[in-house]
Length: 350
Image 1 (tube, rainbow, N blue to C red):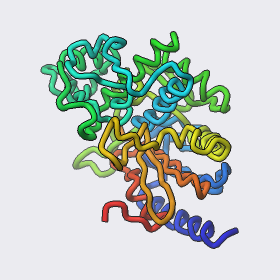
Image 2: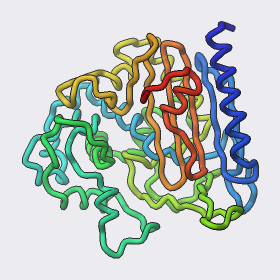
Image 3: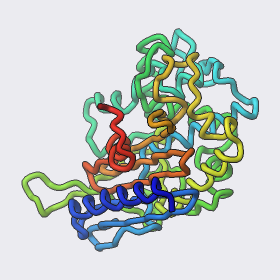
Image 4: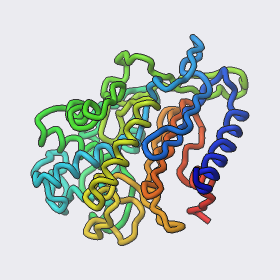
């Protein structure tokens, strides 16, 4: 074992020990893995997937990944680009009725990089009168909100402004292109060939999923009491993905193999390309992944957080290392800056 790997494992073990001391075993918790060269050298599950029945978290527990869905959607779009069915510079207004009221061209590259200027449908949903926090927003409602918002807020490509609407729209384009649902397309392209048997896009939040975790937050002024936080989203593209630690660990082996086999033409390399046609040069958010270059290494990552669930996949492919993290405890710190500092001693903010 190299000294560098030994140090990384030591830092991982120390970080996990601290997390275990901060979260009780009988409450919601987390699953965290360190995958090296396609093998999970560390995989820790701490806490409960279901508090009412005291079912523990394990490698087969399904977590909601929230925005960690976006890299998968971006990979599907970039597949279409590689196959010649789409150009990133293509104006999507003629293809997507939702964009008919936009006066300026909105290209696939703008949507992928969050530089379109399209308002976030979740913000728009939150402004609706008579809405309850647990009301479910559907894909059709999201598209209607985007359409009724009218023109973009700024010239596409001018700046980065993260908006979930971008990936809802990309999901719509993918379904038009493939002639099937996003769930079926992702199953055919990734989940089935890669053996990810417990990973799926879902847009029916109340549908029963085997071994699905619930997410929880503490009840204010009742320190020993918990409340469940429902995933009140029937949208996908921006989110909608459920998966397990075992499946995501296996997926990391496939992402890394593709990186090593295809180099600059690999899926990850295409996802981190710096194409300044669609955003400011050196903007960290690329095509479904953020990129940080430091210490002679490239770190690429995306995370997600919604309704008490949080997730992070953080990769350093030139080292062959991935961190896979999921939690069902509201307030859990699954941020990339935190874990970059814990494992590599890198402070991207400081």
